[in-house]
Length: 143
Image 1 (cartoon, rainbow, N blue to C red):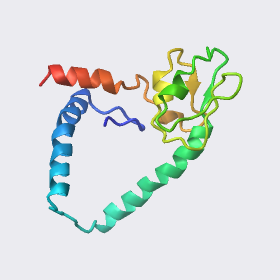
Image 2: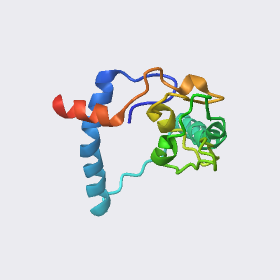
Image 3: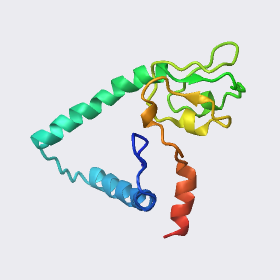
Image 4: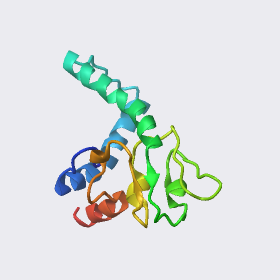
């Protein structure tokens, strides 16, 4: 999946990743179903990076609470409908984001009015965002 954290991945790299995903998933499923196990012990530096990466889940919950709409919010509800974590809206229709955020930023990137912004970690929102559906369609045409 294209990176949505701090830096935009190269366009061609994104296309290569999208094209490689179905094959890798099929390979992993086959290996799991046939009992072919490839467990290795992580190297010490990799373990440190894995631990740091696990902190993202905690940070996402805090960061999700900081997402706020501007006064220009149309109360369309797109952010709540499209959220994979199923955030909720309050009674008057103004989006209110809870602590179950995964920090996928789909709400921010998909907002038709572009009125959502994070209160913290603003650097993690890519200027041009990303559209996975659009990228997948382009990847199909470049096979």
